[in-house]
Length: 401
Ligand SMILES: [Mg+2]
Image 1 (spheres, rainbow, N blue to C red):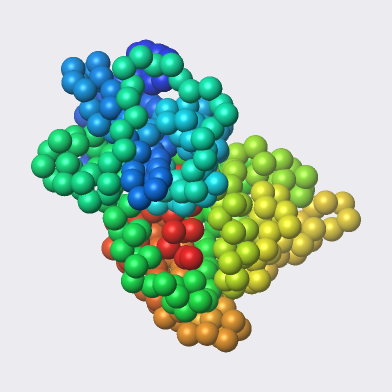
Image 2: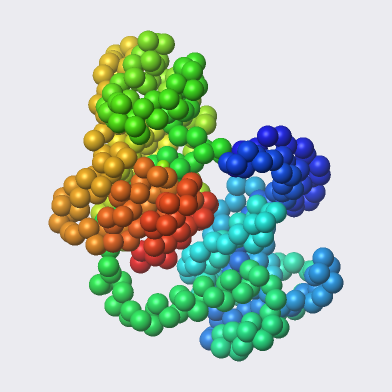
C-alpha cells in the first residue's frame, strides 16, 4: 500500500484529519480518510478485589457509558507515567505497581489511535487534584460482575472490553503458574534491530538511510536485493557493493552517526524493555542485518550478551577502513539463533526471537517463542505465535516474566 497524495483537512485539540489517496499492490487507487491521534492509555485498576470504572456521558455517541480509566498521551509522554496520571485525575488513586497487559488499535479502519493497557495495583489515595469534570462517577465492580456486564452488552466501550479480556487472561496465567517466575519457559531473547528495536517513521532501514545520505542511486539497492534473492550475488558481495559505494563517496563515521541520529530512533519502550529483561535474568542477543554503528549511536551501553551484526571499522581519519558482513542475516538468522542458544547453554525451544520482516522468518520458525513486532508482511505474522503492534514492544514484559 503506497501513499500517492495527502491532503490535510483539520487539526483539533486531540485529533487531526487528513484525506489520502493510496495505491494498493494491485495498482488500484482509493481514498483513505485518516484520523491522526497521539495514542493513549487504559488502566485496569484493581483495589480490594474490585475493579475501578468511570461512568460518564459521551457526547459523540449520545449515551452514558461505563468505561475503564483512560486518557490521551501528551506529546512524548511515557505511557506508564500517563497511566498513573490518568488514574490520579479520574479516580483519585496512585498505583505502586503497573503491569503492561498489551496494546490495541481502537478503530484501525480510519484512526491511528494505539492504546496501551495496564493493570494497576497497590493503590493509595492520590494527592494530585482530580479533574473536576462534571458528571464523571467512579464505580467499583467485582471482576466477575464486570465480565457479566460485558457479555450482556451493558459495557459497550471497546477499550474497556479489551481491558477486561486482557485482565482475565492475565489472572488466568497467574493462577496457572504460581512458580512461573522460577520455572519460566524461556532463557534467551534475541532481537532483530531495524524495524524492531529501532524505528523509522516510514519503515526505512539503516542501509536505505545511508544510501540516501551518500547520494547513491536507491533503485540500485532494490536491484541488489533482487539479485541476492535470485542467488546471483551472495550476502557478503551485497554488503561489499553497498559499503564500497559509501567508501568511494568519502563516507565518514561522523556523517554516518549524524544520519543515524537524525533519521532513526529506538522503538517506544525498547530501552526500558531490554534493560528490564536483563534485570530479570534473560540472556539477550541481537541477530540483525543492521550495522554495529546503529546500536553504538542509539543504545550506547546496551546490555546484550551477543551482538551479531554487520561491522564497520573506521580509520583514524574517520573514514571506513574495512568491513565484515554478518553470516547471520536472512536465512542465516537461523544459524545465529543456534549459536546463541548453544552459547547460553540452552535449547532452541527455550529461545524467544523478536522480528518484524521476512529476513526474520528463518529464526522465527526455529524459536520456541516466535514474536512478530509490527510485522511488515503477513508471512512474518504467520510465523509468529504472538504479534505485538507498532509501539507495543512493552508487551514483551508481560510475555517474559
Ligand atoms: Mg527488521
